[in-house]
Amino acid sequence: MTKLEKARKIINEVDEQMAQLFTKRMEAVKTVAQYKKEHGLQVFDPTREAEIINNGSQRINDEEIKPYYIDFIQNNMDVSKKYQHRILEGMRVAYSGVEGAFANIAANKIFPDAKAVAYPDFKAAYKAVEKGECDAAILPIENSFNGDVGQVMDLAFFGSLFISGVYDISVVQNLLAIKGATTEQIKTVMSHPQALGQCAAYIRKHGWDTIEAVNTAVAVKQVAEMGRCDIAAIGSAEAGEKFGLKKLESHINESNNNTTRFAVFTKMQKLSSENDNHFIMLFTVTNEAGSLGKAISIIGKNGFNLKALKSRPTKELIWNYYFFVEGEGNINSENGKVMLEKLKSKCSEIKVIGSFEKEIVL
Image (cartoon, rainbow, N blue to C red; front, side, top):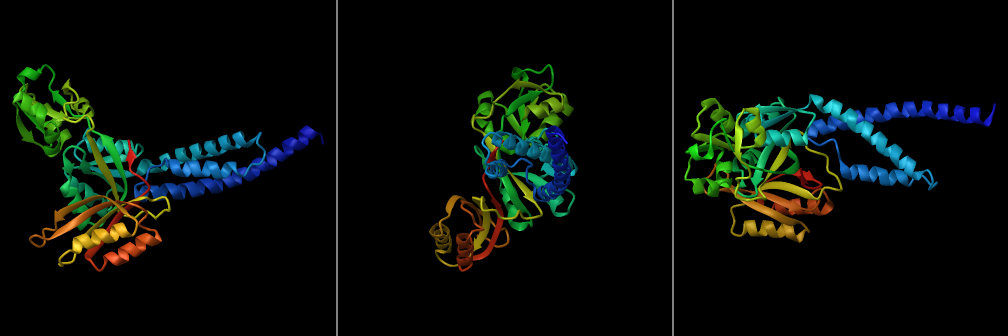
């Protein structure tokens, strides 16, 4: 047997072993994809990929072939992602509104392979996940210009779902009208109260009346159905295109840095990771003087940074509130466990509903 034949024999034997290992690897990839579907996680995890490449490159001592092994690992991961995308095609993601709503846009960006399913309001989208109709719900929790979305916070407090991640999506509001209409003809604008608030200065400048809608895309749809030149909608360019309205003016929201934070709600709680550095927690304090201050002090003394603390009425008792907390630090660490244990003496109820690595800007 020649050297060439021997080399080819080795390659064939290795290829046979690699085929078996490839099958085993893809079975594990399938399990990962199913986990991501259940917990509302994206396919691409840049931290995990960087970790795999770094660890893999250290297995090769030959500096000449090391770059090729890194390419080999990257190709493996690319194939794995393609397989995960295929599996996630059966995923159903709930959102509030109709096609073209900002939540719909968010759902398509976060889960491009999933089927985005429209529901009439936040509660219906949330309940769809609780009832098992959908795998995840995309709901807004805050707008950088117009503040918190209280109804979603209430659903988080009284409901049973968990938050697997938070995503920041820029919001561009547009003035949309039927074809042939002009800005001068407009007398009334219709949109969701949040959008009307974001564009309040622009609306005042023109002296227009306002009509509130369930969400921006519904407003766009209704204006299209009315067919009137004197009524315009405020919403996304995608919604305008979907329902056949033309864009009279773009970027009419008061702030150019208008961003909405969307949370992904799932029935299953994501497994904790040492990389988790953000958490969302809800709690009520005991009816004692200084309880809230003491609770906040416990959080800080255990090495956690409070990014946000917001209060909402519980609606069960007059002047009784729950608190929505966003913090930095790994709440699943030993320090986190100690903090939660100490909080029990000052809080009548505690719910950790989210733990994730970082907030993602899309």
